[in-house]
Length: 253
Image 1 (cartoon, rainbow, N blue to C red):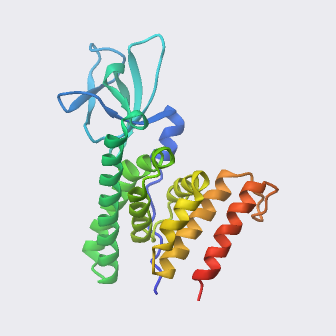
Image 2 (cartoon, one colour; image 1 turned 30 degrees about the vertical axis):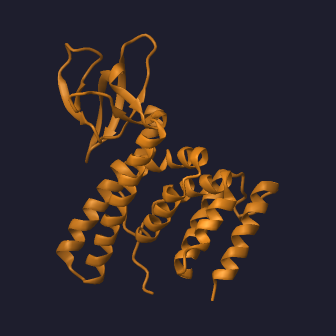
């Protein structure tokens, strides 16, 4: 199978934004469906942008103010202030609401990745440019943020539907150089390796299985204290890697 050339994600991603704003991802909590972002902490400051229901953002609380500085990415970096009451951190949603958001993002990411691959295979340059822009933008603004909350949700629910969808999305998005899916699936594997392996065994395509195993391995190497040569004295890391290697060997031709 011909390997897709890695598509390049925009340099400023939510991964770096989260380091700046620390908390999140979050969505707005506003019955109007939108919240104004202001240049300063108060209604007397000008409106510089708007956050809508499905926009993810990051924030940092100031205990001395009812207003919070937020950072978002909407094709460009947005920094401003919204009222604390308008903030709903995604990880604190109830499980049903969180699952709905996760599935919606995974499904959309998979569709966009499929569209990109179809344009690439068809050698349609116009469709290629359009689909890669759509995929990069969605990865930055939706997929990367939700990858940060998938492990917490999965580890508390053991929801196999989420893992199956995640596997399918990683396979569709195999041309990406983004490492965040690896980190996310690695954390899921750490908390419940037996369940993740059982779902992996359901995949009949060995190439897909090996790709996901490689994602998990890279996620484990990121999570544990691993030397540059990939070795570690951590017993848990070595135990998990041994399982990965055994499964990879079975899947290899």
